Image (spheres, rainbow, N blue to C red):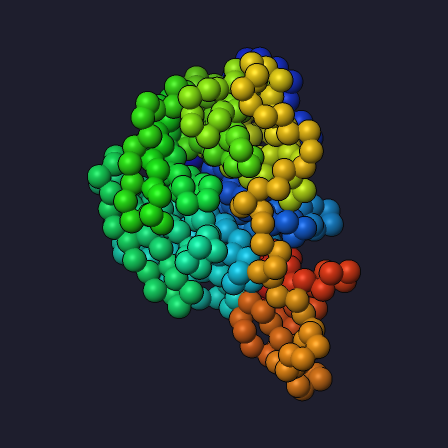
Length: 396
């Protein structure tokens, strides 16, 4: 069955205007993109094209979000997950293959080598990624072949540990970290009519989970995205029956909810992605456009407000930029150029230190050029997102 031509639901009747600052890209995908961002670094999106090839793009490109194929041999059948690991100066991708395995790759080697995290026939949908400086761990979650939530971690040495939980889910999961609280969310099947939102909480780095009760009082097509607004949360989801782009704002106890803010956009295969923007003034969201015209299946991005004026008496209004824990940590980035008193890592003047790979590379080569072009000229920080986009071109 071709997901681009089957199960196309008509866009819902407009209940409001289109999402703010909407950008409809030239790229098309049968599934929504994934998103990750970092302070002063930008936002990076990842998606699959109709043939399964994985593309990445960022808002720092000129023009923004021009897709670059990562590795033609990396093919997926679901939304690929992308995640920035600031303290590792790296960007990761994880994806589901047609044989039901979960693979992981990173920009550090120029998107060349893939590591199999879950063997064939073990996964049904997903995965999702999230990096935490606490323990220097990369978290991975997916729906296993039996329909249960699987959860694992990859440490700095590449060691992978995973286990199945007792919780059944109907969609690929999404992840969010708030301090010591780790949230996993799911909704109804991506190509279905929607189902109840489920949320699971871990306070021990994913070693154990508990279901959040009572469950969220909303239904979702595909997984909802939970965004940390530093004291409040926003849930972005595709509401049935029309898979309508919707945002609702809540407190951290999940016992007060604003009235849902619905937009006139419909999300094909549901599951819109959402992250706090790099300047903390908006929520960047992305989906695959659902319509009956030429916009059908085009990757679409928009900027949602960080607060709602509708029934939000118990929610903090965020007029000022939000400094979110998920966007902290500029001190984790490598500052190119040895500070006073620190030995030069690459004494050969024809080479430059590559913070992603930890190697000295030629300044005249593609990787060295990507390092040099990915340094903020004013602050001197290495930008892993710019590097990830650049090295995708090195093997072409």
